[in-house]
Image 1 (tube, rainbow, N blue to C red):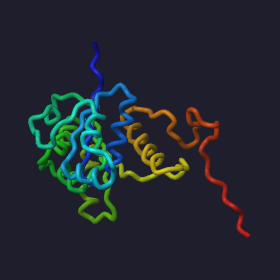
Image 2: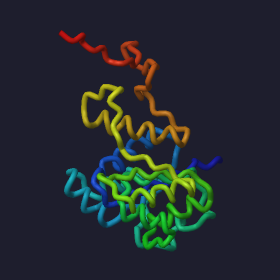
Image 3: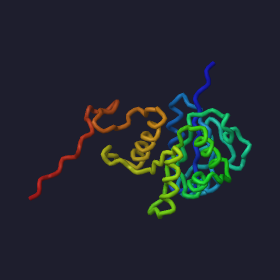
Image 4: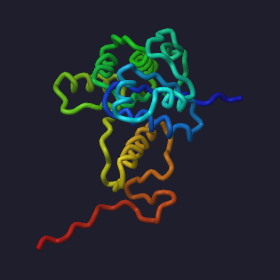
Length: 207
């Protein structure tokens, strides 16, 4: 029997933990085996930003790995996967990945994705950015990582925070060839919609 493709999901301690949680929920609709590693700071953010318990997030993943377990399969390049998404990605995690001096399973798994030339997407959640942050991002881009800050797309005319989150994650999953149904795309008619294509909003004439 063919194995499901694997996707590693990291949730670090930046604000925006909902991106990682919702990503796991969305991936349950795909024939993909998810492997979750969550930092201690992410668990703190989860308590502050949502009403969910850590166990409720862990059950969304196919397999969970302790962030301290440096002997986990994710730490080896022989563990096959499509790549990794860190959602959200803290500046600390990003900086560790950029230098290769990894101290947790999350950053080690990201380093593995880079060295094995697999897709690594970092949803860096920080602003404003100083020069050190930007230099780390440039170094990661040169190594092959995709820097994908969770910036909302207003052309999709989101009606709720949930729609904004889903659209951003849908665009991230596009990078792995995973198409999210009903994603509102520019110039296209979404499945199950009223047939309206996304076009620029009309402006009222002055006066």
